[in-house]
Amino acid sequence: MADLSTHFAGLKLKNPLVVGASPFSRNLELSRLLEDQGAAGIVMYSLFEEEVTNEQLATDHFLNVGTESQPEAQTYLVEPPVMEDKAERYMDQIRALKSALSIPVIASLNGFSKSGWVSLASRMEAAGADAVELNLYSVVTDPDVSSEQVVQGYLEMMRQVRSHTKLPLAIKISSHFKDLPRVLKLASETGVDGFVLFNRFLQPDIDIEKMTVNLKARLSTSDDLAQSIVWTAIVSPEIDKDIVVCSGVHTAQDVVKAIMAGGCAVTMVSELIKHGPRAVGKVLSDLNAWMDMHNYPDINSMRGAMARGRGEHSIAYERRNYMQALQSYNENLL
Image (tube, rainbow, N blue to C red):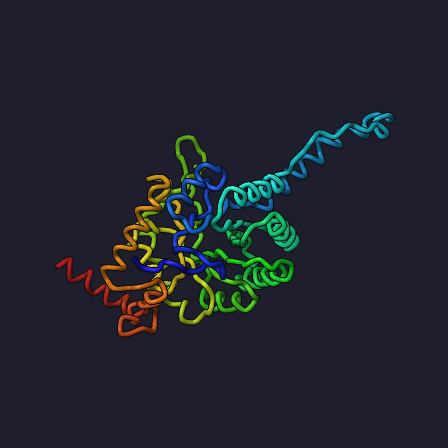
């Protein structure tokens, strides 16, 4: 049986299969089942800074509304209700998961202000998280904001968070940066420990009869893996950081592709939603069988075997392969 041990942003893992950010982490029983099936770690659902901020603003409003309406109101002290903000509930869930599981628990944070990123990441560390995934999920709609401003803002945020926490930091990033290799290289110099490629933007649809925008999270398929694989193969030889492949991992073959491209681990969600926690055990069993059949004794012996610069196949990740693909497509039409 092959040695499946690997790492995630510096965390040691017993195998490369990590449960990605999802509602699974809200349920202790499901989380235990995932661990029992062999999951090497679990990423919590994301905590969005604006959820915390909006909740705090609402609380402040309802505690103070009407205090100026009567003279007596200014000196009347209302007994405050017991309140537990969304951030504290998140920290409680970290503590609960850490008590219930023996695998690493990775918090996930999506902020929008430097102070928010820093303060919430620090609270996650204090709550006992093993690492923090900084999820750079934002859609810039202001035409006066340049891509370089966005990048520099993210880099400064990473430096600030790094200076305030000793936890391993993984950056979950979009593929939509115009110069992704440069962005990842600059990010790697801020002291972060790894990257998760890639987060998936919601794809709203328009209901033309009801005149509404429908928000649906489409489950991935193995066909969605290609983009993460290509970029992992391109950047992994250039960046000395752990790379985790995300989106489109459903089978043992998908895991093999991710590792051969240069990844250290993968995250899985859609396959678990479709088939439940037992999917973890099946994928790991199939992965062991595949590695034994192909004489790979461990993950390290397989990692990067198909990365850019490793043999003649490296040209497949470049421009000329696009031309070859088009030519092949045209020949099939004739």
